[in-house]
Amino acid sequence: MTALPPGSTIGILGGGQLGRMLAVAAAQLGYRCHIYAPAGDNVAFDVAAHSSIGAYDDHAALKDFAQQCDVVTFEFENVPVAPLETIAGLVPIYPPAKALEVAQDRDAEKRFVRSLGGQTANFAIANIQGDVQAAVDAVGIPCILKTIRMGYDGKGQLRVTSQDDLADAWAQTGAQPLIAEAMVQFDAEFSVILVRGQDGEIRFWDSPHNVHVGGILATSTLPAGALVESQQQAARDMAAAVATKLDYVGVFTAEFFASSAGPLFNEIAPRVHNSGHWTIEGAATSQFENHIRAICGLPLGSTETVAARVEMQNLIGDDGDAFEQILADPAAHLHLYGKAQARPGRKIGHVTRLYR
Image 1: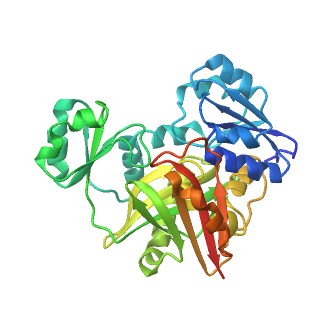
Image 2: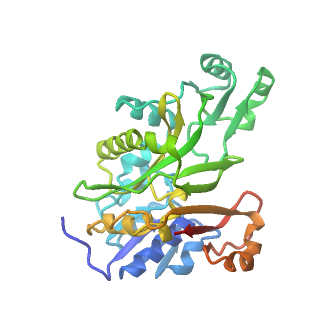
């Protein structure tokens, strides 16, 4: 394994806040970043040495981008896999495209995890509108209908509490293949965030207790509590098995429900993750820096938590208007993403509070 020297260029597919924070971490280690993303409010462009606007299926533009980079990564899991084959022979890509393939298909994702011994909620597939009733019958009501592909932060999902909810379920979720997931009884949600180096070394951050509101992460808190802590090792073992099977390089996230049956797998994210934002101030090495270290072949940094209590709160919509009050709190570390418009339901920043 040969480390990529400082001064090299890291290509990042995706121009959102995760790309922005990756670029900041890369700059601190002496790397330049080149962001590639479709036109839009690409806040990562503000902090990158270079940026390119292009569609993810524009093979010529992707090839030109790759030829200017020494390694390529991505900041979100909905980058189309097929076009990456255009650049696979030109530049190393971490994490591997296989991780995207698994994460982009909820059916494949759950079957993959089950093949490695993981526990998931019961599920059934509806490939056409006529299959929806049978899929719901297979898992029972209440359940959740989700699009098999795409969708995040509660988008592309419908909670089913009665037969009446099925009347226009297909149309509400975009008239595309769906997965019906049984509603599970759980006491807490938590995530396992790990980093895996090119040499296969894996390090874990402590798992936070995650609270979602309206399908969007609201807070991630450490310590996570006795229940989560009692299930953390089993969840780590599962996440590590998935990452190893994928020959993964970089930061990898797996979300779990803490239940009476043990940790139930929910979904993976082959990237840095919102529930790991606390690591910027709350850990010896942040998820963003360790991702850069991993994809560049550098030694991994310590993932130790550095405060007695840590709380990360997402700032949604106009929450960022309270920036002066937040900054007046000596425990608070404010991150605003520079987004042009604070729409309802849109993440515009986060604040992490450390209590030592």
